[in-house]
Length: 447
Ligand SMILES: Nc1ncnc2c1ncn2[C@@H]1O[C@H](COP(=O)(O)OP(=O)(O)O)[C@@H](O)[C@H]1O
Ligand SMILES: [Mg+2]
Image (cartoon, rainbow, N blue to C red):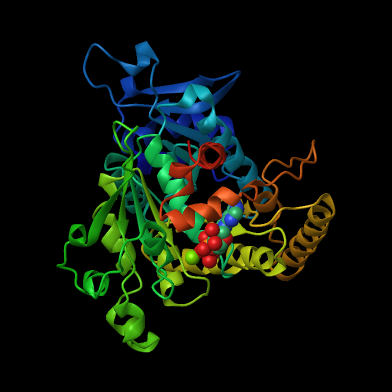
């Protein structure tokens, strides 16, 4: 039976078992998987995901018989469950469940997750530890052929790098330091990394590596489609007599012309809002991670940085109320605004990672308690003023209904980190103690 027929014949109130029975396989067929490439009720730990799929490379490795190395999971719900409203408990529960399957140690080879109720469908990508939506929730009622081809197109040509914007509306919270050290640490794990200094007013990233800003070249690359981005990429290598294969990462330095000569109004005309994304997409398959250091405001460069991103890492400081409030504002306002723009082009747009607590001073228990009180206030305000928005998982990702846990992801104050600034190299390269902190951090978020 064709997908069109199945969608037409499936009752509007079909429960999960009926959707699963009548729709799942036909839908996966439409996405390009043959019957020998699909397994229902695939075991993941002690539970079962509704469908798993993977292309057979040849006759000696048939997924249906080897049952190994799944590539895609699909979680199916009844037609009455609401999967089109991200705030609805049905959606949140289903998305959470899919995420648990994708992150399970048995799912190392899985790259995609699909959530569907045969009315709507959404595609998620898994990149290391990060699960992020690739499409918004798409309809299967109107123009299902377009929805199918959008999902098929993306799973058939996956892009390699995860694009991460490092952003907080507040300065001095560790955006540049974090960008640099995460890049250095990922490079130590032999990941291919590109960092972009998109804060031309400060150009701190280049300073930290002792590299001079570019003059006009980034502007040229952003405003001219024909310009090859590789011409503005340089490589930073950690040379040390005792290191045999020096770790390295690539850098796009700040462009001083972007600040010195141009008014924001003119810049907006010359550089399209998708320019940075387009530029970085052209090298996305050369890297595992692309990190963008964004400026501390909500103007043109910060907006383009978020627009380009899959996920946003938001550093904040325990002793700085504004940085915590701004983290909340980014999550409740700026990121949703950016999603609206990206959705016009059929993309999901960026999501926030849990807030990163970067302590640039030593902290006492009393100060920590003060911070938690402030965070409680921020969470309460967001609930009240942003139609029920729940910020709690962003501040306290380990908190569950069963176990209250106020641990935040972060790194402590370390004199080594600021000392490395003077040495013009990432602390993660220069000091073992700093390296260990950043290794834990990178494992927590990415690996
Ligand atoms: N965890 C830390 N421990 C010690 N010093 C830090 C830490 N994180 C950042 N710093 C220092 O704080 C200052 C501001 O950090 P920076 O990354 O430039 O902030 P931003 O980019 O948000 O303006 C820098 O001097 C940096 O070395
Ligand atoms: Mg900075």
